[in-house]
Image (tube, rainbow, N blue to C red; front, side, top):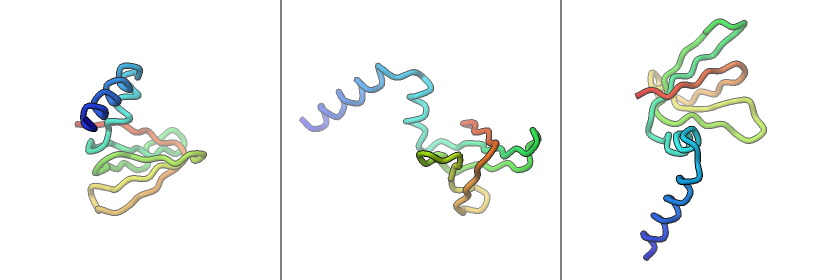
Length: 84
């Protein structure tokens, strides 16, 4: 019964969401390219091991860098692109 309820809840949430909202929620486990810009130029590029997270009332993001396995926090001009 609990599984049926959960399935119906998830289905109802996704029927009212846009494609972008669904991708944001379901982005766990996917890799992302994070490009940090300065003066309009890319100065650093990272690949995350999974989802890139932001905190409320913050312009920063944090993620685990796939090259080092370490936590990275960035802020400012950032381009985040989901990769396959």
